[in-house]
Image (cartoon, rainbow, N blue to C red; front, side, top):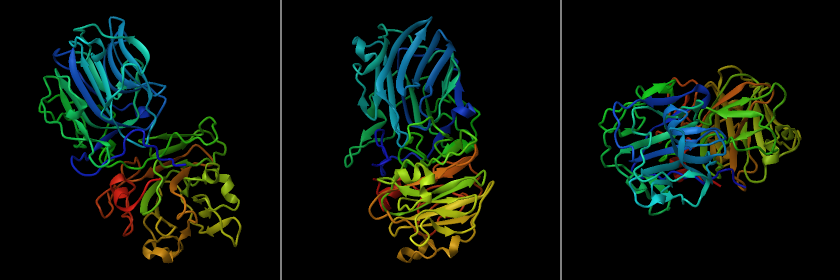
Length: 484
């Protein structure tokens, strides 16, 4: 079984490239806001954005125009992970909750919403497209009613417009957003913003070349010092609310990075951890023993890979496991004490490696390599030869390890499943409510002072990856690896 879901879209290299996104976090109340100075076309407009969800089961708005509870326009994912598009005017609702659920946190979705209430065909007045395909009006769970012809929405009016926040609540979104357009006065097809790749058939971005209308805007999130800057030429800049330069990311629809998988709940129990901050932070939810592994969204079958973890406490584990048949060995991490060939984890409390070794029947190595607050742990995983290496704060690799030693595996921790099963990358907070900060290269809230990248220029790390090791992103996977 693979942990890499592709119900959204994977990224495709080549052609039009998107370099940046913005990370929004609900717990930090991060959002953009703007109040138009004039009413423009409230009947006809097109909204296009790319979104990668990082928290499910919340009211995650991607566009909102809010005056009060009786007057609002809203595009959002709801608490059931359905997409919602509706307008409330003087307490009268029009719009839909669509049936399809959007729960893939490993991939980017392209959302295009078109309003054209001048249309004589009632079913075409609101249109939703996902990854280039229209969501049928028969695929509706809740129907508030079709807006009447020539109906005026609240969007493009002089009330406050928000991205990442729903005004009544308020409720905030947790996601990455990229390449966000509003075209005022024109109903456009999704092909104005994307196209199907002729080789893979995957929907991918393309440059928008049309006009924007008076209240239209284009946010590319390329200027870290001004993430709300409008690049349309209209000057319709958005105000950043609790958003800083640190919220800029390189995880984009054209280079999708690995994150942590909040959907994994092997025991079908109440979640014992919270995944947040763009899928890069894990916090324990209780003071007792957790011992539950949180896996990556990518499951990789070959190649050499590098990532980092910044610690907040010594009670953290980090490592790898089999994605195919080994989940019982790392989903309940206490099982790794027993002979296992399906997982290898380093525990910060004592610096030892949990995993199978025939000579000891439980431990492979005892490094006495503990780590604590603000330490940065580097992990190099060689899936061409079945080895893993650790180091702390850029010092020497454990046990005089040499990640470039290839099949020799000097100082390596062996991964016995590597040539028959794919591998996931795992972290957990076993004994308390502390937090582990992961960095797969696309985004992290951890401390980055040196901004090192791999040899291809991908990823942003504190320490340079070893020669031949790469960030876990789709551009590198296309060159060196495979996803199961």
